[in-house]
Length: 287
Image 1 (tube, rainbow, N blue to C red):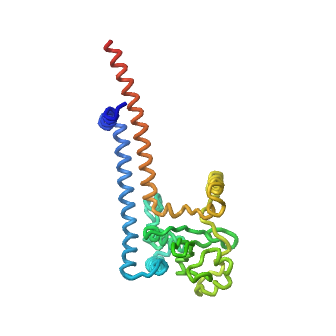
Image 2: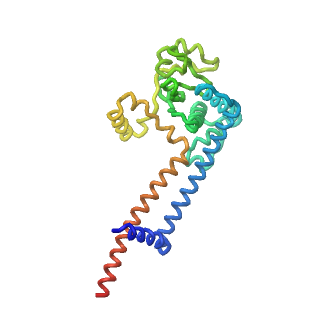
């Protein structure tokens, strides 16, 4: 089939939608949903860009990554700590907030303590151009007792630990930069002297995981084993899924774009087959 004929068929398909109420309704629903998700994604990202812009405006001359990240962490901590004191995790969420569970809710209400602080900082760092991962610390033998952030610092070429709830970073004994989790774990007795008075001593960097692969019993373990085979055990352990789902509107927006494209392809193929059948019947009737 020539390119011109193919284009004519595509035009005929989209023109023919208006003669099929069911197809027209599906296209309208898809496009309205995609439009809604795009606006919500853009709205939420704009809030974070304003936080980033304000942080940079207050500190116009930032010598390196660690100075900027610390200022950003302090800005977010101030905003969220005040809201947490007001709402105290007792806010009533709307149906939209419950359905999408996007990180904007954590910012709005100071929701979620260490988890909320970590998600908001992670999203801000992402939009600032940094790679991040969210870790669930092992506390009293159970993962998830405390949530921290790790940011990849190009200058130091390693993942550095940040605890946004307690405004903590730890100086590395190697080069004076920020320490990674392994170094903090190995030298916790020394690093424990740097934490504030209200720090929970159970948060002793016993162990960490970056994804709960057991959340989906069979599929999760299969995914982890596949990643371990492809990337190696160490890199697979460091895979963090949560940062990709911080803006749920963006995640759903991409999913709906893919779903709409698949729908268009399948419905177009069906339209093409029906067109061939109609032409065959018309030709047979005129013999």
